Image (cartoon, rainbow, N blue to C red; front, side, top):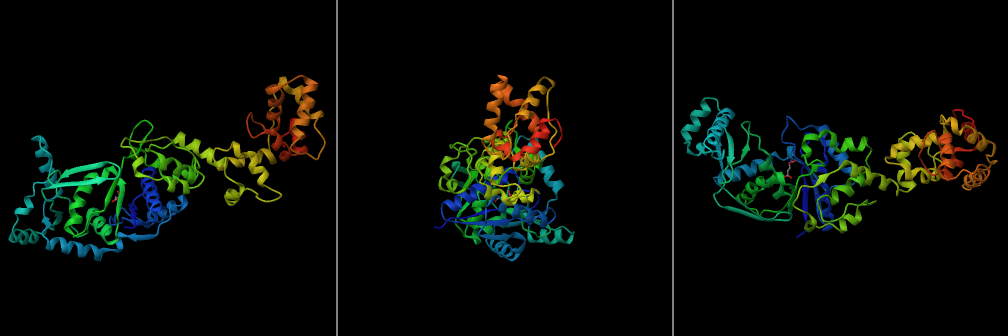
Length: 453
Ligand code: GLU
């Protein structure tokens, strides 16, 4: 059977690290098995879903390179849900309930006070047709619950192994709201059947839902798909990510600190698995190595410092062609007389994020205010005197500093740090041998003379 999976975000917010991981793992599994990946927008919650969030989700997945074979919107599938509802009603698996939220909350409180699990008591099952007519006449509109059968529910989870529930463990789920709109559970199961989904991959916060869904698949005459429930990610302190959703949205990571897509992918593909987290420049090897068997049950910790380290390592390996357009977008003068491959290769090892390159471009082309400590003033003046004539190349630095070493007896840091500070205005940065010709003789001379240039 060909693998068919779906990623089903609700467009009620931006994608965050947690659901990006679900998307990635689902996508890798599909690609590993030559399957199809459906992007399903769970937009039945019309009050909270927006077209802007849907658009942002599509943009974010594209930015990550997680392309989908097919797109579906729950809001466009009302007729399919109507058909499923009719089938379930005919099978006696849906029943109308008239309790108000206040009444339900009171029932729960009473049960909790008695030390009992706060399960719905199915009082509505006892209502006769006449009761229904009377309640409707009072202006009450029913919500509908799915009747769970009191039997064992078991599946072999791709991550959690054997999972067992019982139909009496939870309340009959509400699947249709008072206003007639079907809710997530039912829509999701009907979609999974219609789209021939073979494997449902999602967070372990859905495990109990899955137990109810298994019965819904069966009630609709379908074989349930296989399930894989991933442990939810926590931050480094072990707190659930949901508390910091905003700061860990994909958008936020992309804009500030300027994370590369492959850094996020490298981290999230391996997080919580038995494989080491390492930088990948492309996704292909991650597809080839994908295996649910490598996933552990424990809570993986998402560490933004680790992400930043991966980001730097990925940048340091990017060829000029891969960044050329993005450098243009950053407003830098890319071209043979401007920022070229030589410049990129010179400063690339010093970047933590791509946008940092603007700082080094300014160091090369000015203006830079030199830093010359009083105790180094004579040395820097001497260095200016001995500055080699143009044209300059990669050897100019060693010729220049070789002579200075002999003349002054300085070596190591004492030899080059005052020059670096005078030439670049800062104490660290790209190697000076390739940087010096990029700064050029006139600017270098001016800076060594203490002028901003
Ligand atoms: N829209 C649901 C969510 O974001 C989908 C869960 C599922 O994969 O079934 O939690």
